[in-house]
Image 1: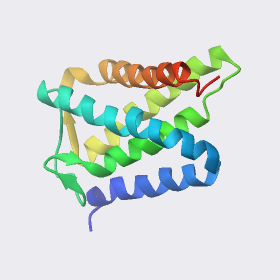
Image 2 (image 1 turned 180 degrees about the vertical axis):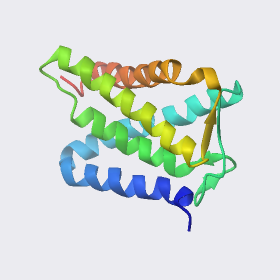
Image 3 (image 1 turned 60 degrees about the horizontal axis):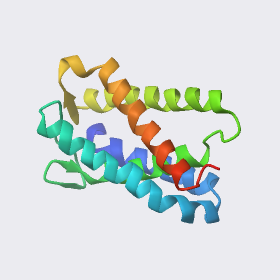
Length: 153
């Protein structure tokens, strides 16, 4: 099995295991539906839009895929959204901006790993600033929805 086929399963084990170890069960039950919508579904919709416009594309996704959709990626994004929302700095607003920027930088950097493995491609103009802004907007949307739903109060 190649490293290409192991990227998403290993990431799922790491992120999912870390979330299961660090997020209390009551919070996990509360955050998991929001993670599925704000993580997995948002990743799917963003992939439809950017893929439809020819900006991004997945290739040779590996073990579990439907068409060219990486199903493990959506599950990983669900756990990332849970992790992001659980550890959001509720009492320090300026730190929240840095936290959001840090996650956007991390996601942009990981896109390079996935691109280097040959699983993902994007238009040359899309990296780094437009991609960073897209990830920052996605994480900001997660925070906005969570605040409106009373999760981060």
